[in-house]
Image 1: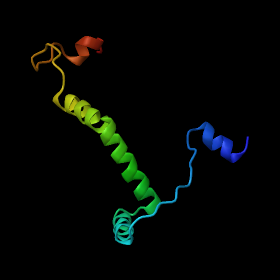
Image 2 (image 1 turned 180 degrees about the horizontal axis):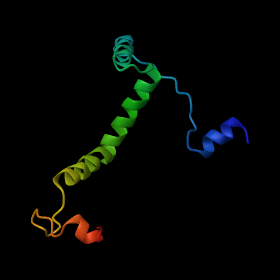
Image 3 (image 1 turned 180 degrees about the vertical axis):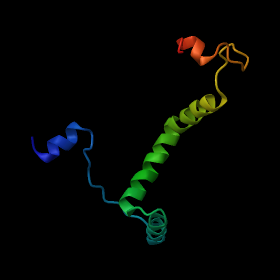
Length: 92
């Protein structure tokens, strides 16, 4: 299997894309990439990915799930432990 086939098989198939952007936008993107210690390519890739995630609802769903985890779930114990750990596991 050649390198290109291997990369496709693990889902890392990439394509080159030529963009025409205004010079001030490119300059600002380069500055932002440097601040974040990223390459311009990585900075643009992440920006596009974040935009797609936001529009697909992924970010909203992730934030909702993280709020659920932070809040916790009612397990019917009213905040008390019903038994000691040693009792539950019969350790002595």
